[in-house]
Image (cartoon, rainbow, N blue to C red; front, side, top):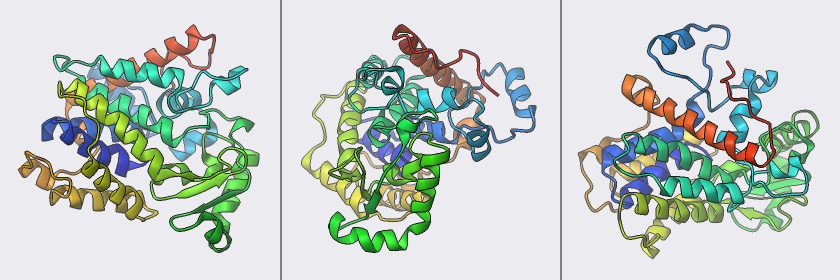
Length: 338
């Protein structure tokens, strides 16, 4: 999923679950920061030294292009933070494939439900954990390792209408993307690279050989994820767990299906504009909601927030590592990879 879900949708769901605007902003910012927490100075250790001096134990949760190519620390990033293993299958590779509603994703859900508001890091725990949990819907059937299990065959996609009727013209218009897909399948089958960006865009309807032979409507997957996430947020905020109302579902569907920009930043602008105008009908809509926006500096520039975010990043990693090792999967290293 992209920033429009990890920040925009999560902010809306948190506000609907009766978190105040400030705490919703922390939850949503932490969720998106999982994607923005990568090594921006790969040829220098200056940033690492600064964090060490401040007593902050940095662990990256995303990879830039250079990191993906070199493969440095790939497993420590993609497996625990973006492609949570399902622990289902007949061999180790199959058990590393990410699946929604899997054994491990359900354990993550239980971990998040155990979050209490007297925990000083509750917003950061929810943000980091919900990012990973949400991605089990977007990234289902792919694994966070370089392996042929991630191959994609006969990729076709459309943003609206009939998949079958529109596929011929869409493929003609997207030969470049299909070329990337074929290249990634053969050379670098990491995660969903061979499916390019299809899994992460809410308005896309796509299919891929034997993986999704009947086609996958992302907006339905994103709605299902939203429902489960909302119920988690309601319980943690000590609200009655009702799930999404019919009106709330309609509002989300209008966003998932109707905001059809390939650029996720453009999609986020629409989400933010709608938040600012109270399109989502927050009962306690206020001045914070009218101007809220995402910036990684909101957390990174605050030493207290930065420390709490990295504490949760490390706690989540250690939890995944323990879960995998209990199942005889030894793909992660306990020490951060710089």
